[in-house]
Length: 325
Image (cartoon, rainbow, N blue to C red; front, side, top):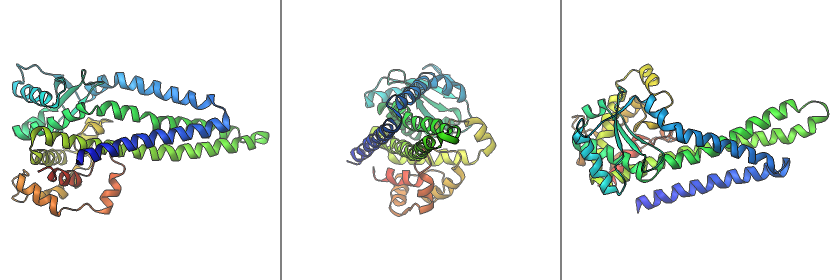
């Protein structure tokens, strides 16, 4: 029931995004002629298409990925194979990322071409059950086609930005003399497009956060051990909090969305999640997760900051995992 509600919210957001961009294009077509917005839409789709197909290569280079055979990593391959079979998807290609921050991520253009990767540091930090729970989360991303959904939705803010940029400068250069009256509608369209760009970005971020919750639910369904995923998140945040901020920014570059837990906010997140570790052994067990889910609260400030993040607040995530016990 909880996953059905998450799915419904996600599709409502998708419908809202396309309704918003459709309304914006109708306004522009009415004021300037039908051909103009089509150009922006086509340009945005071309750019997203290029990003979609070359994206995996960019991820491989940025995250320093080396694909490993079953002979090299038999246990890792075994876990991925078992989870893929349970999830009803083809086994993805398995890789190890050589960045120093504990992380796991999935990427690719389809279920058949998907890849799942973990960092060596993550494998050192997690026990088998925790690693399996994290892999379950990543394979759920593949099963739900999250990479395709987010890439497709990113075209909407891009179209809005193109419209804003074009009409803003057209209004500026067309604002003198006789063209002043013609420039006013252009500046109005630019302002509307910028507002829609900002709102559509927030909606895309919201969809991204829903996908994380949905993948967490998928992991809990595959492994039947939501407390292991909560414990893994806690350890990953702990590992990221210990890294130097300049090193984090250098290593992750623009790949922030590919981190299972946001390394930039790890230090503040760790303070909040330490309350779940009642015996201070560096792990969250089933009892601790249940107790934390019942009493933990997310402040209004944290909820506000979450609006601008690709990932849910860790406290909210762990609380929700407690509901799957």
